[in-house]
Length: 275
Image 1: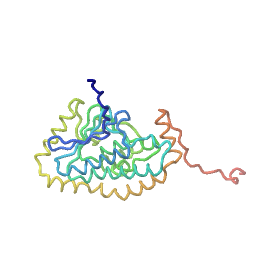
Image 2 (image 1 turned 45 degrees about the vertical axis):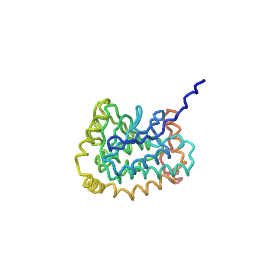
Image 3 (image 1 turned 45 degrees about the horizontal axis):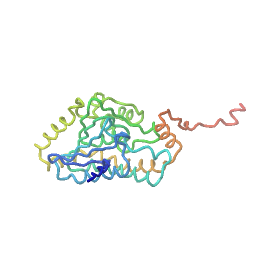
Image 4 (image 1 turned 90 degrees about the vertical axis):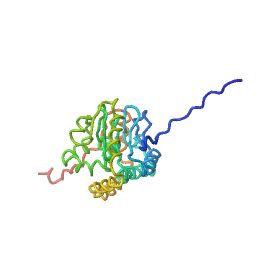
């Protein structure tokens, strides 16, 4: 009797599991630093929306990254309809986090960049491993962080610091993120899960009903930012396929410095030349 070879089972891109009445949503595409595509964004939304009977939701990544945002591969030669769907679904994703009746914790195990940094911004709490880093990438890769970066970091970090993070594309260590108010706690990498469990233990001793009321009330600034998000998202969608978008994505994938279009310049008039 000949034994058959075991079937290869592909690891799901998003793993949603319950641990002691807590829903863990794990991104599992470490080969691309957990950058999410449309299907992954939809699966994350479903996992979060189905967690209304849990005590808390935890979002985390696999490998050395928490999340590098939306997958950049399609920006180099974008399909406008697919990219529109990814952008609008990303908006639904961050709003699913904010409207979830349960506290949502970002367990930041590594790099949080671009849209991944905005996921951290959207979460109610953030616990960071010491190796984690944070930052937006928009203007560096031909995009703009309009789903929490440009419009919500100001109220969180202060106007100047918020603009610095949204516009300058700098990287921040876990300790720097703690100092400026991006995260609640920094722990050694090996202690990340234990730290999250400790926070969840505190949450379990509180009233779920009044936690939901408190969370809804604290969303005041996020809710006020919605008009801006919708308008900026529409602008971002109309810019799909721009020279700067395709160049930024190509440079990122080729690991080189992008060569963006220079700012508009005023032509010198002939009268001025004659004088």
